[in-house]
Image (cartoon, rainbow, N blue to C red; front, side):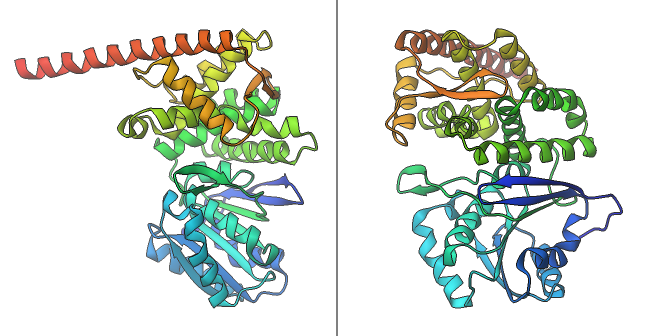
Length: 391
């Protein structure tokens, strides 16, 4: 782990039943062992849950760091990716915790991607009624999501069905270790930032729009600022006393899930989770206008921000009826009400009933638009192939 004299950017994030201290900086991980003692009190045992793709030298460095903090460390390796985030994977993990003899007064530290951190959030929240928990995310999407909204667990063929409210008391994002260049994880983080800013407040949206160019150029200060702002916004949403406000974190998610379920696997992989969520955001904002509540200017501003952040539209040829069936399945699988999280204004995303004729109109327009993109992309590909043959 490298050292840094840069100050650690910090933000206290309100969560149901407590708060999380977010720390974002190059070299932030160097204080992990000492800082973990603050949330535990008297150090005893610490379970380090790591993805199997995490560099072995980094694992040893963190284990040594925790040992220096006077913790007796057990390393629990789990598969990276969503394989670890399944209900049927939990019994073996619980058995490991039992074998380590950890209690509600010991600590659990998660280090890895968004799935590893989400799996660990479930373990920390449920073991012995909850135990002190710290996150060390190694991807940007894990930073913005896992503090307040870790991904739910999959059950059989049903995805994201079993959820918990995260109990993380500390998140340490070491920018020496988290890739900032464009990747599926980075694009997903940017999409989450946009969705959170729209659901959060006009100030949050203006701040993100103002920092967009700096984020693209890799400006660390801007990235720090927006990571912290996004975490604070999502924490405020899920901590709200109003159920209507809490549901704002679902902005764009239903359409994202529907699209992922009805597109071919290779198309889903090519698009990536960030662009799928961006499509959900775009579609929901247009539905809001269609039901007479949304603001057209906000739609255009949001589109411009998504495009600037590299979240391009997804070319695909698919029938509206197929997408509609997938939307209903994704929505009604988790609630008995067929409602959409729509941005009625910036800072006011609410579950709203959408008349069938409005849904049909906008879904038809969306499918036609993306089909034209797919046709254009196909022509470009064939044109490139022909030029190569001529050469």
